[in-house]
Image 1 (cartoon, helix red, strand yellow):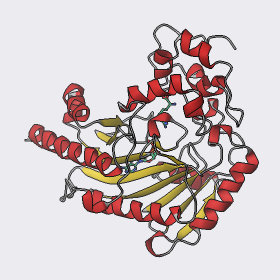
Image 2 (cartoon, rainbow, N blue to C red):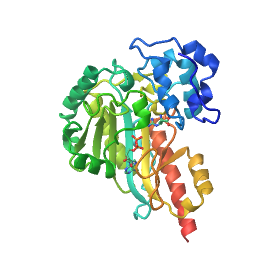
Image 3 (tube, rainbow, N blue to C red):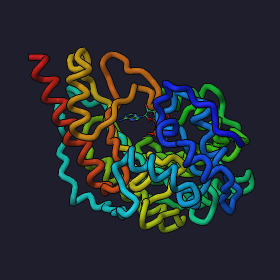
Image 4 (tube, rainbow, N blue to C red):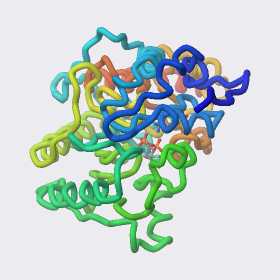
Length: 344
Ligand code: ADP
Ligand code: ARG
């Protein structure tokens, strides 16, 4: 393999950190699952507009290709090679009263974590048999959940286009055909092995075999962040008692994209800030201060509609889950204050 063709004006972390020296040192390395540098970088090579541009095929990718991954992890999370990740899933440590009790600004709240099953390759390097095994064993565990978490599994295979589109439109289900995932082989054998579990109210959901093997999701209308977090923690603990997840003391929960390592948590609100949105510089000054990311209304790589944005924590590694949610809460309080001042 030769050094890839990366245009001068490419701004992804791949383009920034894949120097010819790093490339030379890694180009012939392979993990025990047969995952190569070429595969790890293909998404960023094929999608030059990537923000990141790399994926791991297995936990070992993070050590085998460390000269590249460590740089990207440091750049994205501010997390160094010697740092240690810490987890804290105790809702009592979270100080998050509803920032919008009158329901003027926050439409809905959602918190998700990514998880992958221990001792198996991640999605980019998994075989069809292994992926199907993940689906059957995870669903077996999910089917034993009780109380608020009790629900049913809906495989993508055999789901009608209407039902699938409706679930996507209503923000419950992942999209299909993501070009970034496509290029790293995460969409192989689609739709087999993929599906969604959810309770009746759709306040607790689990995505199976998308970018990560599990995405555990808690969501509801309004701004009660603590209630959403508490339900998520209960769900994580219940599932963890049945399925062993891939975790490492240095980088926390192992995920296929380095942006999700650590807590693998993205806590978001859909929030209407039409006045603030007229001054993107002021808007970004607040989100930057609280380490937040702005997304559009249909998730990553989508646009805002009617001044409604998806606001979430940007940092996931080297901070605890409680801190990740606290970042989001505190930033949302500041955004609402700014929006109120502009409205007056
Ligand atoms: P992920 O959360 O897994 O990183 P996306 O950004 O693609 O992935 O979001 C997945 C879906 O969740 C999208 O349909 C998005 O609109 C929806 N979503 C995210 N945050 C919220 C929220 N606070 N309320 C309602 N839906 C949300
Ligand atoms: N690979 C894509 C990029 O580099 C997405 C990165 C972060 N998002 C994610 N869903 N992992 O732009």
